[in-house]
Structures are given as C-alpha cells and as structure tokens.
Length: 195
Image (spheres, rainbow, N blue to C red):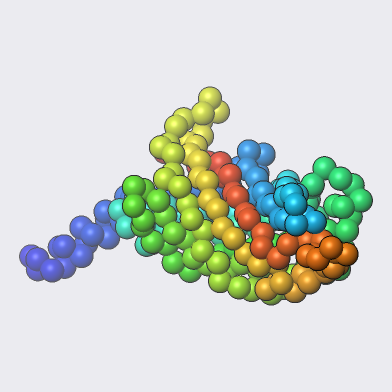
C-alpha cells in the first residue's frame, strides 16, 4: 500500500473526527458594546438576537470557521429614545441594513488556548476586516435535553466611522458627544445534537 496515500487518508479521517459544528443558541448569547459618552463615561448596550454557526476543528484550528448574523433592530441600551436614535440613519440605519454579519476568513491559535479569529464584519453594508480575541473555549457538556453545549467569549475594538456612523456633536468645553472607538464583547453559547 502507498504510504503517502495511507497517511493522507489517516489525516483526513483525523480532521473529520475532530470537526464539530455548533449552532449559536440565541436565547443564551449576546453581543455587547460600549462607547464613550460626553468624554466622561461609557454607555453600554447589547443586541438581543444572534444566530449563526461555528465549526470547530479540534485537530487543526485553522480549519475552523465562524458565521454570525445579528439582528440590528434589537439594539438595547435601556433607554427607548436613545435606542430609537441608534436604529436611525445616524447610526445603524436598520430600515436599510437590518443585519450585522461576521464571516471568518482565518482562525489562528494563540497562547494557552486563545484563538484569533479574523474575518469580515459588515455594518450598514460596509465591510471591514476585524480580528476577534477569543478566550479558550469551554469544554463540552451535555444538557438535560440531549444537546452538547460549550461556550465562547470574544472581544474586539472597532472605529464606528469605518462603518459610516459619523454622527456627533462638539461640546462647548471641548471634546465630542460620542466617542469613535467601540469596544465589543461577545458571549456565545454553542449547541449541537449529541452523537
């Protein structure tokens, strides 16, 4: 038997055996953000509906992938008037661009189980490359309903002007109403069917 062919077949089987596909559990996941307000404090908010799929290859993490969709209309900062403004054309313009998406292009292993997931983030129809810093994934557990679950936490920073969200106002004492840098935190629960 050809040793090279045998090794290729063995490697393919290992990769297939190490690959797991998970659906994002929207009920137990959130995309949170914070941005500077009046140069003195941070305003925090979140999106209430996240969906998508994550493929994790335990043998070769570079074969893993992430595909996420966020319902932009679910933005919530616990202030109705501010949320209405965020849905308007000044910010997310949800009437024209109802979703925010992230599609990975490469996944790299870091130290201690950390991952760096680089992909295309699309907001308001504008796509920019962003890298998510992902903490070590939790081990799999079995829930009472026959699903296999695990969790993921990730962080990133973006500049809102890169996505044509340029609304602002200059303060009398200097500075601006809304900061440009936005911190993003993702808390994701992943699920797959056992077996």
